[in-house]
Length: 333
Image 1: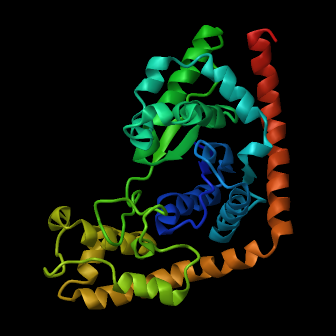
Image 2: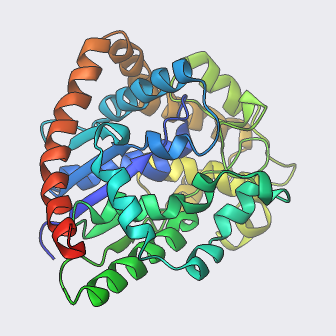
């Protein structure tokens, strides 16, 4: 298909973990290194759909950018910026809100999950943030968007909005119709304490996740304490379906080794979980420890992080301002 135009974003929640790395950022680096046109955004506007401490948010924006850089996203190859520094995102979100239909938003399952039972107290921003996500993507004529299963519905909304805009304004090719890039394997890394729940920063137990800023000893300790079971080490993928914690650990190992699950199972046949956990710990330390050290180093260079974000914002503003000018003409402004 040739060069893809990639857009993706990560919320600045602070303390990104192994699930974020395997499920998203590792894939970003691969897409960049395939010489695609890549834009990676710290989506801080999305973060404020729930109340934030301004000082912590500012810190988390820098930390997320530092994590991008430490993991291998290269500002000379990709555009890295924070969303709030490019006004076109907010402006386009309003225009698209006038195109999107209430019925489409009412079908968004993530709002129902995040708002819970007391939806009347949820912010309007939480309800309409899928429109902002559509603006993020359409603003840069992205052809492909890396998404997890939980974001696939939002990309469908972006596709619906782009099609309706193009039809309403009789401009068939004005907005690209973005395609999903769904990671087939290891897209969802689960909690080390409960294999039925996604690895998350919001989990009260720090033992449930490997943070990208953990020390070597913390990583080893967390894998040592990770939940397994009393059965023998599995020999086939079928038996993993009823053993979510084991499936998760083998998935982490396979992803970091870039191997098929079947090959990983074969590597450890006739071995016990103690041996497997030692090998997994060594592998995680080997892959994540350099990232952890680099994050800490880059975080101390606030001037460097800020410069990367400024440079990225300048590039993003240049691209997005042209699109906004064309959109305003369509509306008659």
